Amino acid sequence: MDKSSQVAKQEATEGQIISYLATMLGSTPSPDDSLALIGVDSVAMAELTFELEKRFSIQIDDDVLDVDTIRELTHYVISRMPA
Image (cartoon, rainbow, N blue to C red; front, top):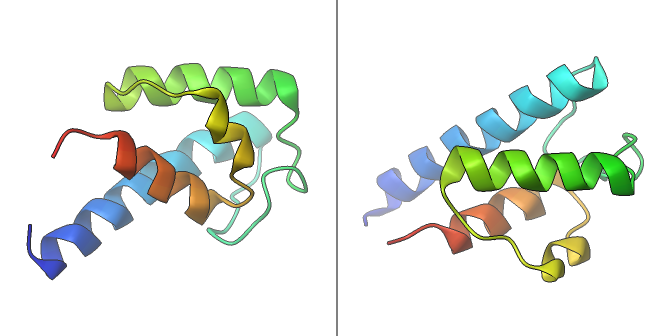
């Protein structure tokens, strides 16, 4: 995959995650926002995990708990997608 395709995939994925979080939280977060600081607690993280698995057809492991920001979450999701 070339660089522009990678950037497009990252932007599209990040946009979907931010859109879902905006609906969940009632305000639009930025990519560098900490999930914990914007109010993603353990219950919200479980809901988010379920949504990401369904939306992107991926399997998420417990190591998702190591991500801090929306941008890190985007990279995590992309790393789980088939090539």
